Figure: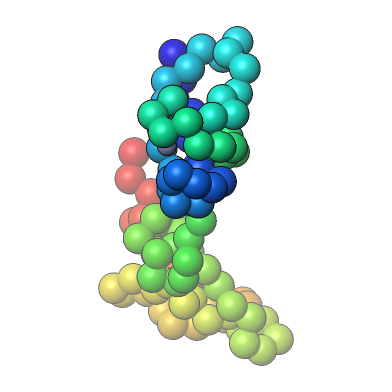
Length: 104
Ligand SMILES: [Zn+2]
C-alpha cells in the first residue's frame, strides 16, 4: 500500500503539522487525523526531480556547458583538466573531449 502525506489544518494539532499514513489506493482521503481527530488535508506527493543548480553540479553530472562569448567563441564553463577554456569555431582542437567524460 502506498504512503500518503497529510497535514493538519487546525486544532487540536498545530496547523501544517504533517504525517504519513499507509492507505489503499481505493481508500477515500482522510478528513480527520486518526490520532487527534483534528481536520487534515491530503498533500500532493511530488516526485523528486533533480535539477542541476549550477555549473559545478552540471559538471559533476557529466555535462559540458558552453556559453557564447563572441561570434564563434564559446566558453566551456564546465571545463575539466586539459580542456580549453574557449571553443573557437574552425579550431577543432578547442572542442571539449567528450570521450574523456563519457565512460561506458
Ligand atoms: Zn493529529
